[in-house]
Amino acid sequence: MKPSETSPRPGTATRPTLTRRRPLHTLAASGVAVVGGGALAASHDPIPADAAVPYAGGGPDESEETLSGLNPTRALHELLSGNKRYVAAHMLHPRQGVPRRAQVAPSQKPLAAILSCADSRVPPEIVFDQGLGDLFVIRVAGNTADDVALGSLEYAVDHLGVRLVMVLGHERCGAVQATHDLLTKGEQLPGHIAALVVPIVPAVQAAQTMRGDVVDNAVTANVRMVTAHVRTTAPILSAHVQKGALKVVGARYDLESGAVTLIA
Ligand SMILES: [Zn+2]
Image 1 (tube, protein in one colour):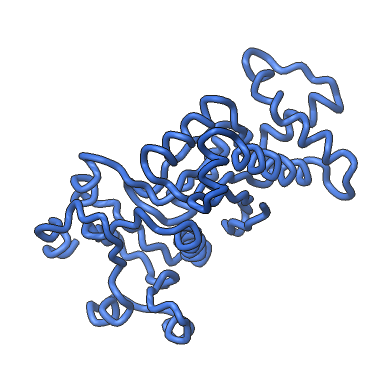
Image 2: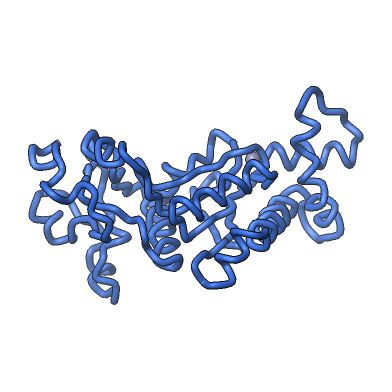
């Protein structure tokens, strides 16, 4: 870590306005290899959101940076850009150092809320290449939205100013598979696992009428159903959506490629 990155710039630690990571030319000037700069240079977006910078360890703290307050479209762009970096193995590992920890210690203003599966292979901060204080994450096997999850999302939107909610499913989801096995084989699930699959039953039933792999189709159906449920849940979430202050999207994660694809 460079000395200049060990502490926040005076007067910037709590600045609510958006500042962005260093431009590519400054990265190049600092000796960091920049890959794919030509494609970025052709972009109309002056922000190097897809900056392909090989990780050399001890990633940039960028403690002066905050992404809170982005409109929903820009917030989604930020997430998907981070995922592109992750897929290409060009992660920035932003906002993960001690200065960032100090910056967000008093309060949080996350960029987005993610309702994702608890699966250990789908950690949102990693697959979206984000840092401390960036993502408000609710994780439950099967990425379903019970009242506690909805309450958590409402808190993120109403109290923390989050303007983007993403429901994130993934291929080969064990919770969806278990639901399928329950319905098709009558397999009894022990303990509280039975309660876990109940909200996934409608998605699996819908997938049973589709062509193709039932479980894989059910993963997509489940994301779409949960996304629609979150989007229309009154009084807080639906109201924010209707006035254009909140975007709720559904996506699924590919375990092999690491890519996140919007599906709802
Ligand atoms: Zn899962």
